[in-house]
Image (cartoon, rainbow, N blue to C red; front, side):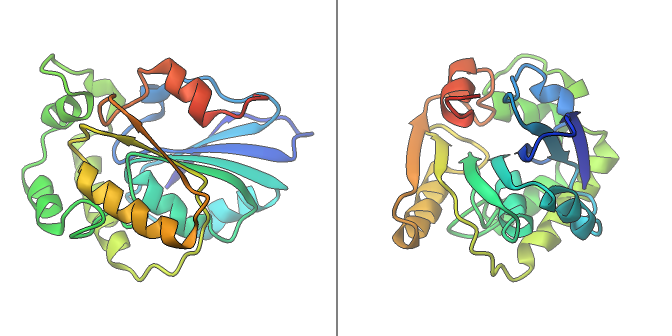
Length: 223
């Protein structure tokens, strides 16, 4: 994994971590405003999880963390941040299972995606657009294939995390994480965490062109 520092002040005791989805580079989210009064980090590139402890150590020094996780980043955050001082956690178009027959991307669909992965088609699905996408926001094809393999193995590992999520944002027309799977996963989660807030949007899987959604639902009011 790669943890990029977006903003850092030695006096800050709070941190904001954006946990990217599969394949996306930091420049895909350059339009997003980061919160004031907190160090900001961007976590991406899931080709290798061997540095998990190192990343946890970097973030453990903060008194509180605010997490916004997107797509496959939701299952990553759920597992690696559960022992940290998480104050708030928002999930966007993903589930804590990642790959799952009923509560995520079906294993057969994921395997088919791996076998026939195409960068342009992937972005067109994410943006629900037939226009030629900007491929510069995605990692190179070899990295993406390695990342798919790594995430597949990661999701097969036993998940014992009890991380608390506060809010979930689900796209009704999501073509990456099916609406039915997201609803099933979070409805089950809500049986144990009844204060979970579930919101819906008509934005595509990549919701971040909707500036109001980010400002109003992903940043705290005092940010």
